Length: 118
Image (cartoon, rainbow, N blue to C red; front, side, top):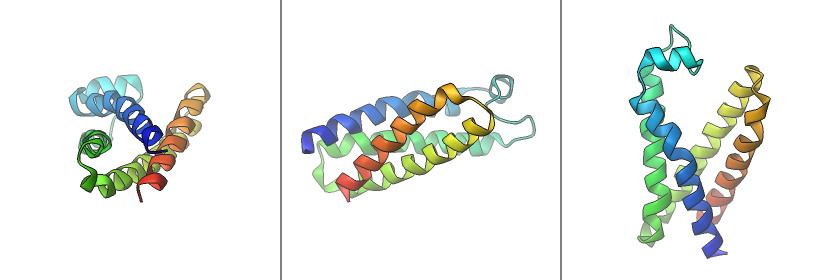
């Protein structure tokens, strides 16, 4: 089961890398134009989420080699689960139903990693 856990951790790391980097690097105007944030929304909150997604990515990968950091992976996976629940709510409200299956999959994988690392 441990090998499967590592595989899922790497999949989650890959999944969260792009959105994390996008939240950190993309200009507010572009995020607003894409509908990823409201015009009067705080870019600081978006940047905060992006930084924590990248930290979560590191928390998925580093403990593969440094076993003593496994509790950090459990916390990161729990955080990813919370982010996915929020993302599901946001995308459902925006009627972006095509995105829901991948978000549900990411939620299930995040819960799997959290349970296996606690």
